[in-house]
Length: 269
Image (cartoon, rainbow, N blue to C red; front, side, top):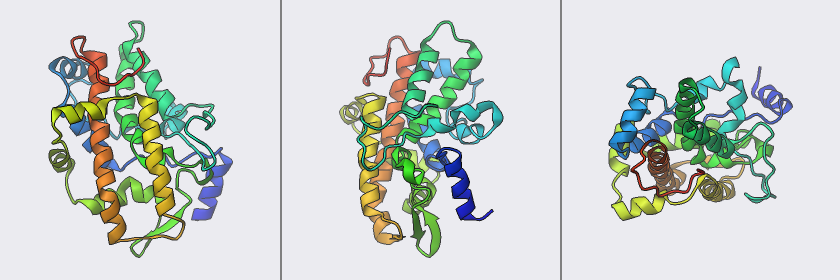
């Protein structure tokens, strides 16, 4: 099946996106930064739920799981579409849910004494992944172009699309680092600045990401050749989004699992 037929098939399925928010490196980096900021109580709770595995281990799991029959219901939970003629507030909600509603749902599951351990394990895996997606600009992209998947560009001489450039090509071109090196280099804010980054909630963070997304569309029209200048201009934004995603993920998990933790963000009780 050629590319045009694939896109047509996706549109026929109701605008389903190729929901691969950040590449594996990005999700791993965000989880690794978060892990550095977990309290001992939160770490102990997560170790128990995840059978000793790190949240980094599960950071990319949802990208595969959402394409299996068991978790097919979560495909639309990786993104929130906002078209060019809409604002964050006016954009219609997806009938099957989006990244913001999914995060609120999974937080509620973790806070509920009635939910099973299995449901809580799944909720942790989803939150770890979806917090990464929430900070990938093209996951707040237009429904009309499948979050940039049909915006054809070139990455140097190679055919690409806007979404794939932001998922992996741009971060990998920015720094040839492992996720641990990304974490080491980015996670250096003074405590007061960290707390300022953590402030807000899922909606405010999504709206912030959407603001970046609008700039990306403006600066990357169809046919753009992504080259050295583009990488230099946008690398600080990639770095910023990785760091924000990691710090905010830590704050969310600490609020849920550590009763002594003083929250910074305002996730729903």
